Amino acid sequence: MYLISLNLKFETKVLDIAYLLMLKLMKEPKFKFDKKFVLLHIKILSKQNKFKDAVDFIDRQSEWFKDKLERQQLEASLYLQANNWVMAINVFFNILRLNSHINQYTDMWVEYQKCITVICDDFLPKRKKYELANNLDIIVAKAETKGVNFDPITIEAEPEEVLFNLIISC
Figure 1 (cartoon, helix red, strand yellow):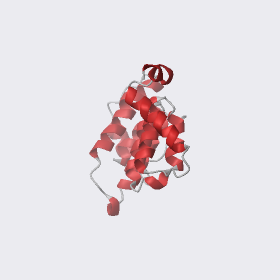
Figure 2 (figure 1 turned 45 degrees about the vertical axis):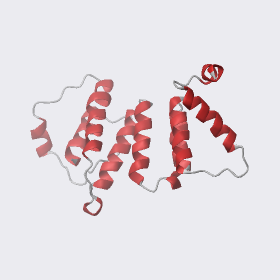
Figure 3 (figure 1 turned 90 degrees about the horizontal axis):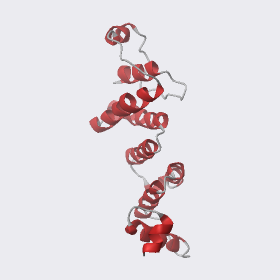
Figure 4 (figure 1 turned 180 degrees about the vertical axis):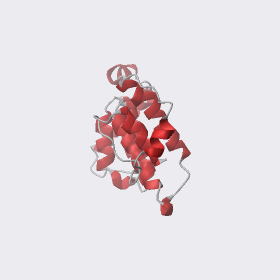
């Protein structure tokens, strides 16, 4: 048991055993995927720091996620673990954009908080020393806001653009 943990380098022996059992089960001819297997495989990939593989696996096994919100929350979590702030922000913006329609509205304060935290604590400080302008409310009031609803961002996006997108969309 100890040798398994040394080879796989997981933080718990339970994940080591689960990983080995999963590999063995996948070789069985009658093996069928289920949601528990999919979630376990995603957890194992994330523990191995294979975040891109985990996101790709979620895309390939998307039929197991009946709730699109659950799938997008998993993807955002993986992007955050990989320190890919732009993709995490885009996933959060997508969640919030879909929620902004009256027909689909649910209380998503947690997602709003995560999105704001990622932008203000992770994305903006990493891009450059960014200070919030004292007159931001005046700038927002004068700006053209028609059609802005959590628009996707790119790696080239300036911090001001991302923050403006967030403020106008809320």
